[in-house]
Each structure stands twice: as C-alpha cells, then as structure tokens.
Length: 537
Image (cartoon, rainbow, N blue to C red; front, top):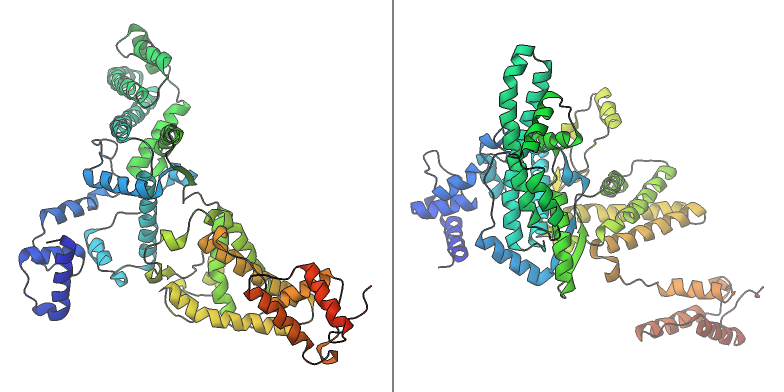
C-alpha cells in the first residue's frame, strides 16, 4: 500500500475513535513520526525516529568542537530524483550569495526532540513567540539553501568531489588554527618551553601542509587550465621537499599571523561557535558559474537570482513599514492629519523600495499554502523604542500582538478581513476632510501608488494590467483638448450621462477613445448645445 494512503487511513481511524483506537506498535510509530500523536512515557522509538532525532540532539549545540572533523556528505538517490524533477520544471539556477551567507554572527539552536514533535503537530503554543520566530526564519533559510542546491548546474560528479574537498579543507582549517595558536603560545612562552613546542608545532604544520596539498590537487579537477598551478603545487608546496621543510622551519621561528591565517581561523570558529566566515557559498558560486556557462552554451535553460538573504537594511526597514501601516491606519488614534499623511507616504515609498526585490520572488508561487501561513505581529526592535517602553513601565510581552485581532500570530485572511474595511474608512474620512486642497490630492495619489506597487510586488509587474476609469479618461481628454466643462447643474440634462455611456460602450468593445476622437465628440455636443464648455483659451 502507498505510504501516504496508509497514513491517511491511520489518521482517519485516529480521528474517528480517538484514544480508543487500537493501533499496532508499527502503526502507532507511524503516527508518532508524522506528529499526529505524542509518544507515551513508555514509548519505544523506532530506529528511523532515533536517527532523525540524533541529528537534532543536544550534543549538536554550540560550541561543537567536533564540527570541523566530519566525513564527506553525499547526495542520495531520493535527492537526485528530486533535483532532476526540479530542473526539468524550472531549469538550472545560479544563486548569487549574499553577505549574510558568508559572514555569520550566530546560528539558531537546533530543535530539541520535544520541539520536533510539537512542531510536526502544529502545536505552536508549546513555543515562545521568540523561539517560534527563530525556528520559522531558520526553516526558511534551509528551504532557500535547498532550492539553491536543487537548481545548481554543477554536475553530481563535481558535487561529490566538492564534498570530499570540503571535509578535508574543514579539517585543514582547524589544524591550521591550532598551529597558529601554538605558534603564538611559543612566542610568549619561556625559552625552555618554547623549544619543546617546536617539535609538536612542526608536526602540526606538516599535517596541515599535506591536507593543503590534497585540497589544492583535488581542486584542480573542478576546473580546467590549471597546469602551472599543478606544477607549483607538486614542487614548491610539497611538504616532503627540502625547500618546503626549510620554509616551514622559518615559519616556526619567525611566524607572524597573515590574512590567510585569520580567514582560516574565522572558518573554524564558524563551525565550532556559529560565528565566523564561510567561504563555501563563494566557491559554490564560482563553480556554478563555470558549469552554468557550459550548460547555457549547449542550449540549456540557466537562470540567475540573488540570494533571498541579500536584503539590505533599508529594504528590511521598508518591509517593516509595510507590515506596520495597516494596524496604524485601522485605528482612530486622533493623530494630526500631517502624521496620517506621513504614514501614507511611507507605505507608498516602502512598496516602491521593495519592488526590485520582489520581481524574482512571487509569494503566490514560493510560499506553500499561503492562506494557512501565519504572520507574526510587528515587534519593536529599535533601542530608542525599547527604552521608551521601559521608562513607561510597559512590558513588551503584555502588549505584543496584532491590534484589534489580539493575537501574536495571524493568517493573511485574518489580517486582511480585519484591517481592510477599517483602513478604507480612515482613508475616506481623511479625503473628505481635504476634499478641496492639495493634501487630499496627495493622499489619493499616494494610496493609488501604494495599490499599484503592491499588486506588482505580489504577482510581478509583468502580470499587472494598468488602466484608468472612464471618469478619469474623460477628465484627461478634456485637459488634453484644453476644454473645461461647466458645472453639472448648468449642463443640458443627460448630456454627461450620454457622453459617459458612449465612452463605456467603446471600452466594452476594447476600442477606447483617442484624444482626437474625444475632441470631435465634445465639439459635436458643443455645437448642439448639449454639452457646455467654458471658452477655450
């Protein structure tokens, strides 16, 4: 039986009979693994579940001293099959890494066993808001990395070679860092102890050079045209050559840290502490670029995209502004109209700012089950705001939540259905107060711009059709023809309605009036005294 169908049958039995359902040990294990039931205290985990949990066990928390020393990780058949389907549908994609992919300033704590099962059951009440937010972001980053791997144009053979070289290079970075620490210790240690350290340091450097040689020779296979480098590596850098030995002895006696030493140390601290530098994305990008050009030259589809993490700080600020505008406009704060206008302006500017970053990322396509996704409320992060709340004695956790909705997390439907009518009412009242001044005109323009940019940001600018209402076209045509109609109460009864009807009929036939055609229409009605205008200047 198909595993998915079997699981659906088990879930149906569980829903029908609840705790009285009689499951075999194997059936109960499948329900535990899917997150439908919580394991009992005396539950015996299956080997698959133990293997899955071992990946997130407490021993993987930072610092992880064994992280630099690991076996190569190869792709299995299931992954290769998924990659083939992905490429067949979307083509190859070269992802340009962002700075945040390279420089790391802390990594989220891996999920514990309990968190894995509660998350699988969608029991989000088990998590604090901050922890849930951390996990959501981490899962998104992992998904982004997985999509980048699936779209990579690098052949599997080179990926396997890269995995081996990565394992060797990680070990070499750690050993090089250890050697650097030992050499620093030797310089500051007493002379007798310093001499004793010379031998161990030399041994460490020998191992380091051997690993360096293995990495360098292996990297030649990833690209063509490195004959000279091969010769240099096999002679000048050979750790068993006399020249290399003498050079290494000079390193021990008169060593000073170099930029390369700093980079290697930063790579090691990244693996152990989660803080440092990872050059993997840069090497992977160069390799993808090379193989992508080869594939493109033979007619294969190859796309480029920026890393989803390459979002500058000002763009993140724009996203926060968009997120915060609706709650602000939904409530009558009795704010001065100048402040309300600034909020409208920030919304329009924010939508325009994020537009270049949204064109290659369509949320309707990229987010699974977007209607059931939950969005966290805006949370103050600026130090000044936090200090102000602290001075007022306001506990952030007590006020954390979407205004009116009253929850920290809410679905897009909840947010839209709650705020849309309230925001519309706020805008209408503002325009009514400024119906005949420049502030009202500016507000209408900002709201229209926000709506246009928002649609383009959701589904891409190419998928948005722009048009104007009949009344707007009528006004534009009058301005173009340099004619201004008299007030409606001075017009011949029904004249405006007739002109509007004619224009709407043409719109329905997808034959809108040109300015010249409308000029002829207005002149015709002017002569018959059905449509009166001020004299043209």
